[in-house]
Length: 236
Ligand code: SAM
Image 1 (cartoon, rainbow, N blue to C red):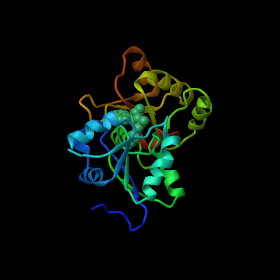
Image 2: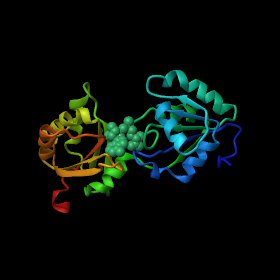
Image 3: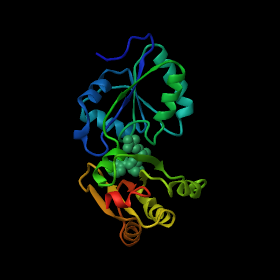
Image 4: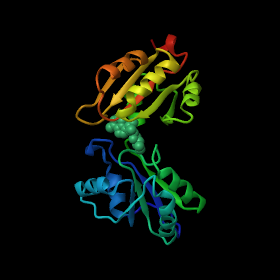
């Protein structure tokens, strides 16, 4: 039975899914996905393979960045008629650098209960494996590709906490070069392919990592972790 609070509305479950290793799927995630009325998925083909693996029969609705405005009213209607919906993304925790945030905000504005089903997220997995300070950190997600990029980079210069940045392999070299230019040569880590066969943490300084990404193609999904300003004495 779904563990939803009593309400005449349904519940919006945010179900975390693996970021590369199916063994990271939680028992609760499987149960909730089996029990909900609909699953809103970023990529229905991708999620279809996950559901098949765990033998989950479910009705899926596609829900991604390009259709979120159009789809949200319908999903809210389902919830208001008492249906339970789970949101999943291609990988990790819904709402972290993906469109689930938009649906969560809309659901809250209609007094719909939000229930998180915690699980993997690349940012935290990368941070804890990096060896950089974990006592305080800031999640920057993806840097803006064009407009606002310089301004964002400038705001990071004096950031004292460890900085977590998402990047696609295609743009990794440019981003490392920009970070090196703005933040200087300080300790940093590229955590790539976390939980997958070729998982690795490449440790060095921003200058070394930028040079390495110029000389060899660093493949796969990546998280960049950078040491905050002023941590040198304490952690080196
Ligand atoms: N919601 C996801 C989460 O909880 O981490 C993040 C979605 S975001 C669109 C995708 C980005 O997450 C990738 O570009 C990469 O920076 C990071 N990422 C996802 N899976 C990863 C993995 N297995 N290893 C390293 N980074 C990963």
